[in-house]
Amino acid sequence: MRISGTFRELRTKKEGALIAYVCAGDGDTPGIVHALVRGGADIVELGLPFSDPVADGPTIQASIQRALDAGMNPDKYFAMVRNLDVDVPLVVMTYYNLIFKRGYCEKNGVDLIFLVAPTTEGSRLEDILKRGTGFLYLVSRLGVTGARADVALSTKEVLDRVKTDTPRAVGFGISSGKQAASVFKNGADGVIVGSAFVDIIASGRDVTGRLEALASELKSSMQ
Amino acid sequence: MNINQKGKFGRFGGQFVPEVLMPALEELEEAYERFRDNPDFKKELDYYLRDFAGRPSPLYHARRLSEKYGVKVYLKREDLLHGGAHKLNNTLGQALLAKYMGKRRLIAETGAGQHGTATAMVGANLGMTTEVYMGAEDTRRQRMNVYRMELMGTKVIPVTTGSQTLKDAINEALRDWVSNVENTHYLIGSVVGPHPYPTIVRDFQSVIGNEVRSQILEKEGRLPDSIIACTGGGSNAMGIFHPFVKDTGVKLFAVEAGGSGLKCTDKAALHSASLSVGEEGVLHGARTKILQDPYGQILESHSISAGLDYSGVGPELAYLAETGRVIPVNADDNEALAAFHELSRMEGIIPALESSHALAYLAKAADSGELGGIVVINVSGRGDKDLETVLEKGVQA
Figure (cartoon, rainbow over the protein chains, first blue to last red):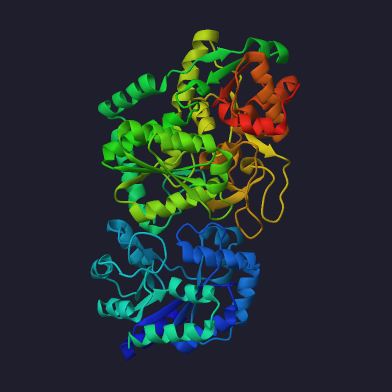
């Protein structure tokens, strides 16, 4: 509910949504989330770390490993989320086994956000469009997560092809305001940025200040 | 959505993969349905199985072992296959399928290096670019297999993430496939992974059980009372079991690696017995039995035999075990070592440490009478690759 409300509000203002991903438990998560929101993040995807993250590239794999080594687990995660005093919707980004094992979806009434890849077509795409809630996560290119200098041409192709009233956010590879602006211009309702934020967290230097600055750069490129 | 209905064995199996891979799985399923009964495909596969791999493999009556244990023991000699293990049955089938599909590049994961080697052999033979992901830890434990693969022109990529073993090699191969799905076939080495892999690998490995059926009928005029196979992911087990699943008079024993005990620490299991003591979960694209902690994080597994050292098991085996058709049992590291030495000394056959687990169950169960009068044991591979490991443990008197 809160997610679609956020997108409705942004559409009225003609702004793109900045969806920021970080892995919970890697660094000072509450401090990190607050910095992202101060910088302009509209939605925060908080990764719940899993031992075998097959869809993630090296940057986020390493972040997940640091979080697991620091003792993050699903109980701590949901306790932390309950105590996070932020004014934006939070999205759980994780792998299925953790949810399957503990039945969190049933328990917490969580909506499911579907991903659409450049290779998703036909009846499968129709099924996904019917079931999408919150927003659709359009994967910009083949491959795993991670920042890329060029956001593939396939992004525009996917945006042109996937027509729906559900808000469409594009992720995988986006790291700069310039890229975000071009994706927004091509018709996306927002962008999802993960590895670029995680790189800042991994560096350990002026983390909150730089997170806020990058969030602000990305957000202002879609206003 | 049909996503959760396809390729199910009871409630096990399915397709739990990154969205990018769904069309590739559909393409593979469609191609397999199209080519499996295609006369050209079958003829070419039969040719390679016979003239390149050396099939059929013998069903050998182990006379001295039979006398010792008081049951008639037959050994299915997959150790005599080209490359020294049953793995080639599957890599030949899948690589040919990939060729018929127009793919130019093969990728594979490997633990001990047997599947990697079998992939390297077909890659070289069919002239396809071949890259194999192997845990960095395993590349050290199995140096000779790394060298064998490289000799045949395969690039071996050490995996340094996670526990640096088989499950991490699978993760890395999946990441590669997600990025290169258009020209690449992921040649999975066991009856694991998302549909259609468990079915495809089982079918290509079923040549083992089909041969056993006609061989035992010829030698004994009847089916065996029991079949014993070691089980990690479960490809040699499903291969020999599958043609007998409907013959309920034939007991099917899946012997898992008991490691150094059926216990767990925080991060690791001391065994690889996912069928016996694992819990339901979703790993590498399928719902099956896996070794996991109370939160659902995957535990590292352990076995003296790298080929059984895996935190999951094929979904069809999870189903057959649950329905009682397959009986999951286990043998620990020491029992497997004892069986390794016993077969070497009594029959002049040095078995792989994986297969030694199956042989160990003969010693454990023969006295109880549960095996019946005629038992077939799948000697899934030869033990030359394991000599270093065995020497470290000390040669038994």
